[in-house]
Length: 388
Image 1: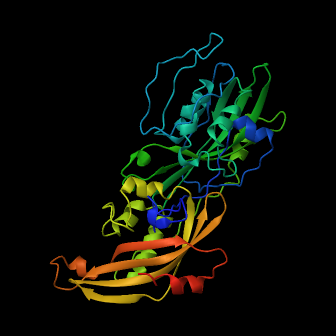
Image 2 (image 1 turned 180 degrees about the horizontal axis):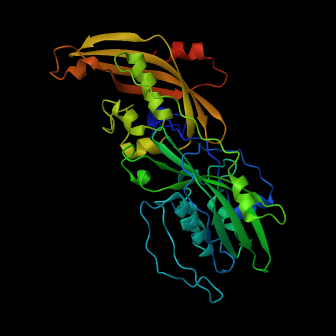
Image 3 (image 1 turned 45 degrees about the vertical axis):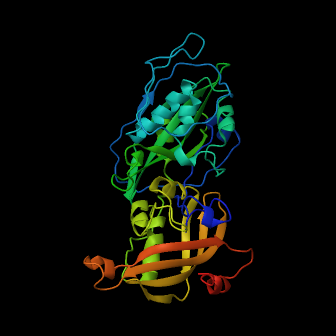
């Protein structure tokens, strides 16, 4: 199944997207002043070696809202050591995305330098999706800092969780925000950063951390920094991934293995199950980069299969078609139902000297479309492969 960006999946450029459900913050002051309460996101404590650090930030002037948003760069950018953001003051440039705490410091360095495009880009795919406590559209993101002169950052002991090809680190954070009128406010909460394990994704996703979640709130009056840091990430829970599953000697199990890989964000594994991925053939995946992008808005996919049908042997191969219904949970909290037909192929014994060719099934094509409203699963399964 390729892409859920419009109703006709046969014309899509990506496959059904998976993203872990994460919480992020959209504009520090905008989110906190509205009293927004984020869903908790915790991690399993596997590392508590980080020490509290404070980033002292000189005051800067209020922000402009005229710039356009940019995407996350794939490597640390170069910039002068200092800039003149206004009022005769300078803020040294800082960018370190190879470390999760360094990423948070880099984010607020960009805010204090009024480099909002850089700051927005650190959220990666989490920005602008309309999900609770994630950054809003870029103009709204910038506007959220219009009354902020500077932000000083203090971080506490980090907690890490690794699994399913991903790494997550939660970072207790206290923020001292100064306003242009000289007043200040204290905020505290938990940022969660993410990166893909090396070898899972050939892009720089395995090298650099991105901001995935943020739960930030106004601190009670007279709170001590150490107390706020101790409380900041207490109610977090780590995202859960399904157990690993791979079985390709049966056609239906191949399809189950495929969506297991998608739900675990193991896109390279899923991509390899396709026989003609990236070839441009109808009803097959696009090039790998577009394949991965196609999963940016999906949390998980629930697969239901119907009765497979053998198409017999032809030209040294055996084909099996599988009716399928897919219920996609999306990052905005909604679900969509799709249905259609996957065709799998296996080489007949003796045709190919490679024994794996006749042992393992491969995904040959997938023709999937949006289900009509109110459709039931049994009806969709009965119709899934009728036109194939």
